Structures are given as C-alpha cells and as structure tokens.
Amino acid sequence: MTSTDIADRPSYGAENAAGVAIAAEKRERARDVRPLRRLLPYLSRRRGDVICAVVFLVLAAAASLAVPVAFRGVIDHGFAAGDAGAVDRAFLGLGGVALLMALFSAARFYFVSKIGERVVADLRADVYDHLLSLSSGYFAKVRTGEVLSRLTVDAALIENLVGSTASIATRASITLIGAAAMLVVTNAKLAGLLLLIIPAMLGPVLLFGRKVRGLATAAQDRVADASAAASESIDAIDTVQAFGREDDMRARFRNAVERAFEAARKRIGARAQLTAGAIGVMFLGVALVLWLGARSVLSGEMTPGALAQFVLFAILAAGNGAMLSEVWGDVLKASGATERLTQILAEKPEIAAPPNPVALPSPGRGAIRFADVSFAYPDSGARSALNGFTLDVRPGETVALVGPSGAGKSTVFRLLLRFYDPTAGEVFLDGVEARRADPRDWRERFSYVSQDAHLFSGSAGDNIRLGRPDASDADLERAARRAEAWSFLEPRGGLAADVGDRGRALSGGERQRLSLARALARDAPVLLLDEATSALDAQNERHVQAALAEARKGRTTLIIAHRLATILEADRIVVMDGGRVVEEGDHAALVARGGLYAQLAAMQFAGA
Image (cartoon, rainbow, N blue to C red; front, side, top):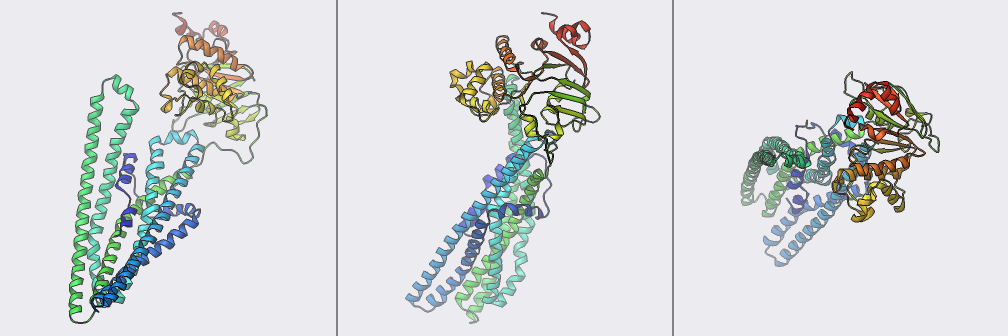
C-alpha cells in the first residue's frame, strides 16, 4: 500500500462527523449499488476532470505494476551479474518508475478529490434549492434534523465514495487483474498454487468485515444519541439553567458519551481482529509461496529476480483483493446515502405554478376573498382547521381576526401566503384565484410579520433587506425608524449592527420591531400582522401602533390579535370559532351583541 492509499482512505474524522449528525434510529442499509447511477448526471457535468482522473488512475496502476519488473532487473541484471554499471542502470530504472508512480498518483489524487468535492457541492446545492421549493406539508412530515443529516452526513458519505473510495476500488481492481496476469506470466505453477490459497487469505476480511460494519453503524447511532442530548440541552439552555438541571444534563450527556465509547471500543476490537487475521493469513500464504519459490530457485527452475518479482506481484494481488472487500461496505453506505438524498429531489411541491399562470393585476389593490373555504392539515384526521370560511376584505381595509385558540386564525394567513391550498372552496387576490397564479408572484403581494419574529444571523440591514433586496440603505433606515427600531440599532452601528445567531443578541421586543421593519421595507399591497406587538412594552407598543397606523394607509391589513386593546381601531373585527366566522362588526357593535366577542372583551377589560 502506498502513501497515496492512506491519503485516499476516508478519515476517522469524517466517520465521526458522520456519526455525530446521523439520526438515532437505525436506517436500513442499501443492499445494491443501483442508486449510485443517480450520480452519473453530476459526473457528466465534469467530463474533463473524470477523463483526467481515469487516465492518471490507469497510469498510476500501471506504474505500480512496473515496480516488481524493475526490481527483477535489479536482481537478475545487477546483483546476479556482478556488474556495478548494470546495478546502477537497474536502480536508475527503478527510481524512474517510482518517480512516475508518484507523479501519476498525485495527479490522480488531485482530480479524483476535486471531482468528489464538486459533485457533493452540486448535489448539496440542488437538494437545498429543491427543499426551498417544497411546501409546508413536507416539513410537517419530516424532522428538521433528518433533513440536515441528509445534507451533511449523507453528502459526506457520497464525497468519500466519489473522492476516494471509487478511486481506490478502481485502482485496486486494475492492479489486482494486472498482478494476477503477471503472476501467471512469471510462473504459472506458483500462480496456480497461490490461486488456491487466496480464498483463505480473504476469508478473515469477509468474516470480520461484516461484523465491523455492523458495529460501526451501532457506534454511529450511539454518537448520534450523545449529539442529540447535547443539542437539545444547548438549544434550551435558558430553561435548563432556570430550573437548575445542569447536573442532570451533564449526567445524561456523560452516559450517552460512555455508551458511544463502549460501542466504538467494540468496533475497534473487531477491526483489530480483522487486521490481525488478514495480515497473518496473507503473510503466511506469501511465506509458503516464497518457500516453494526458493526451492525452485535452488533447483534452477527460476531466477532470484523472477522469485522476487513473483512475491511482489503476490503481495500486490493479496493487498488489493483485501482492499476491495474492505471498501465494499463504504460503497453500500454511499449507495444508501445517494438514495436518501435523491428521495428529497424526487419530492414534488404541493404548491406549484400551473402550466400557464394567470398574472396578477399591476399595481396590486389588495382585494381578498375567501369563498366557502374548508381546510384540514395533513395527518390531522377528521379535524378541520377551517369549515366553510367566507370573508371579503376590501382594498385598503384593516380587518382584525379574533377568537379562541384553534379557531383557525393562523390558518387563514397560511392559506393567504400559499403555504397550503384549500381542501375545498377558493381564495382570491385581486380577482385571481390562488391555484391559477404563480406562488412566488402571489407572495410578492404580501408583507408578513409573524409572532415568532424569525431573524437570521448577520446584520440588521441584511435582515431588513430580506423584505426588499433592491432597497437602498436609506430605504432600510427609513423602515427601521418607522418600526421604532432605529433607537436601539443606532447605538450598535445602525444597519451594520450584528443581531447574533437567530437574533439572540436582541431582546424579544427588539426582534419583533426589526421584523416589523422588514415588512415595512417590502411595501406590499397586503400587510399581515400575526400578534405583531405581543412582545412590546406599553410605551413601545404605542409607538409601533402609530407606525403601523401610518403603514396601513393605502394597503389592506389583516391582524391576528389576542389582546383586543390592539385592534380597537380596526375597520372591522371578524370573530372566528370552529374554523368559521361567527360574528363581525366594530368593537362597540360586537360588545353590544353580547356574543363570543363580548365574552372575550369582558375577560380582558374587566380590570381596566
């Protein structure tokens, strides 16, 4: 085995990284390599690099096969002849072969590794692009950790295959075939004997190899358990510390780490047995052949150089045969990883543009209509979120949606944003039915402020610009001022202020105001506010309400609010219960009616 063999083998660090992110439950392992055919389009994009890799791979294998032949020349034409000049020429030839092998191996390693990195980068990008096109229903069915595992772990396994294992397997196959042919050419009798003992040489590899792969999977699962324990506790560090459960979490993580160590120890032990068995049997077999060959040299049936050449070819054949059986497990794992990644690419988005989408009127007016809409979330059984929901919102009107939890208020927003389409009924925007429009064009007509105020790591300006990528810095600053966010951004560097990972450098109220600024920067015809002021104190809420009152001018606004005091100025209040409209009107009329809204108002304003 050359030094480049070691460089090409998947590192233990890569194995551990794969184990950390892999899901805790055991995955079914692939039993064939047919899924690997799905990588061919990615390889065809890099046809030039693939050709170079194959050429240098064949040349490197040929150079390695030339080493025993050159070594035979050193012995037969140098040492045996007793000619110093012949020895010099023979060693010069051997050095030239070694130099060529080094150059070819380096070039092969470069092109193969480059292909592996490129293929995985393209595959990851394609999968991520496709993920962004999938509907919310898909993410309701899968865990985020599983999706991330496929983007990281499975991609790393494919990278190991394309960037190293495939090269090793191909070169080992070429070398094995070439070495076997040269063994027959060198001495057919000894080659036949060696053919009989090769199965015994490969036996330990086949016997222990399966055990090692099974223990490796178990070790990866145990490391995944430790990773999951650490991830959960770190994500909820505030809760852990608030309840003083640090010691419990430490004990839980240490137990998971110990279980991972024990599984790894068993894997290491099995691999040690594999190594001992393979090396022991291989060299005992070579020693037997060498003994028989030595007797042939003594009897004059072959030259010392021919015996040395035969032994070297036997070592090459045995070593590469063992290598092929060892990397087969890596091929199977990569096949399974390819299948899991391409399963994502095979997913079809539930919300997609029709073949001939209808263009929305320009400029947008913001007229909204729900016509007898019913909707049930996937896997929710017979329970519907909306039941015959009907609502008309005029352009420029401010409508507040109120009602108890589970009444269907957030579902209205989800349907407006085309995260889902109705099970029955129709949703219209400016006279265009939702299913007839391109979802991206449709969503361009909405500005959305969620209750959770999702932010991204980076600067405040980057987060506001998400609402309108072509906005100038002046536009962003204006939006921040209107959302009452500039007061806390300016001392931190203005638009360049770092908001931290997921906005954790900001308070809850600051995150919500920055989210408001993002919506104001978008300047869309329809503004959707989902509890947009729930995290603000009384003083800031008054400021933001004033900003929102200005922002609502000339555009349609829908507000979800549990705090009724925040929607008293709405043009219309729509009361929902059980997925349908049960009341509507202004605050005074609804209170006078004595229905559900009056009950909610009585509970909230009783102590006022």
